Length: 232
Image (cartoon, rainbow, N blue to C red; front, side, top):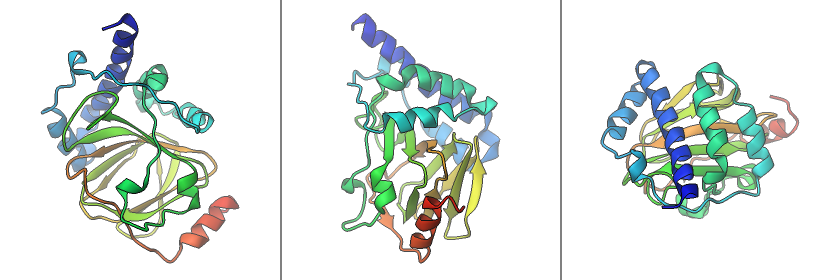
């Protein structure tokens, strides 16, 4: 293994373990965190287990830079420091149709600017795992990630200062940096961003091959129109 690859693996290893440390420090805040940690304990996340992956940058590089710079909450400092160090070691990808049911309408905003990097999971850029995913997820500003559901239980840690969420088809609510979102299997959820991009940690605990079903909601056009006018 080359010296450059060793350094890359060390940086990704440090990022993953900074995320795990955040989970450990917040185990009691949400029952989903304990479930994530119990699954993580079954995985080999040692430096020796790091996979040799090829980095992949993104056409949304400037937006990603803005999203990373917006992560300023003190409790997230360890994560963002490691992310800044490892950013160009990661493989950044955009979601595509394979994750969704045929003819799923995710909206122009989502299709224009979404991004993820899989740190742990199948074909991840950090550590290989089966039926488990841990990574980073980004949305561009003024974007609605329309209501959808999947069989995979899911946990988010919001890194950005403000994002809007509609959980279980209940009213919209804003969440701040460091907040934890849990979506049980089949629970509908939607996300909206405001004048800044949105960055988060995401985990799928199991059933990761399940297809996302977009769930029509009558306010999509209104929400997207208001986001574009900065009216929310």
